[in-house]
Amino acid sequence: MQRAIDLFYRLLDLILCLLLAAMALMVFLNVILRYTMNSGIPVSEELSRFCFVWLTFIGAVVAHRHNMHIGMETVVSMLGRRGRMMMMGISDLVIIACSMVLFWGTWKQLPINLSMTAPVSGLSMGWVYGTGLFTATGIILITLERIIRLLRGQVSDDEIAAFAGERQMYDANAEAPK
Image (tube, rainbow, N blue to C red):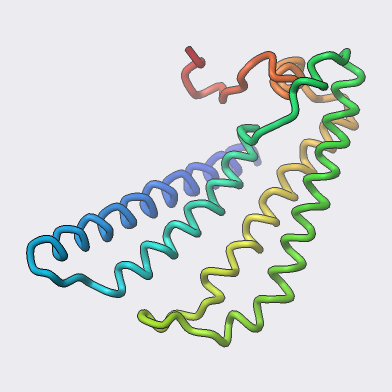
């Protein structure tokens, strides 16, 4: 199961790289065309904005998996192990609540956005605004897994220290932070 999850996140990393490359290529090409020929490709402006939205929302899921979002470490670092675990649980519950609001709002707004089309490309705006469903679902699943491990007592000391801002977490496969 862990192998499938790791493959999924590798796929997300690949998608992020492709989105960034596509966005950079489209913007660069437009800059060159405007500078040299006084013209551009209108659809590339729109598609690069869509790529940026997807890049941001997919990146939020990947960042959440690696605990890279901003935290309030000042208060947490003053607590002991039990207090840190309680704060981690409370934080995770707040994250789930906010993600559920994002999911519900996107779900309610999606039918409206599906009927709207982008002005240049003609793509359904549901492709842009639907990213909230993916992001909210991903963050909820990651956080639920963390809460289950927290309740079972399977959270490592490194995770608790990282939550308190004492250590930077990294993957076992990645190089240690310098």
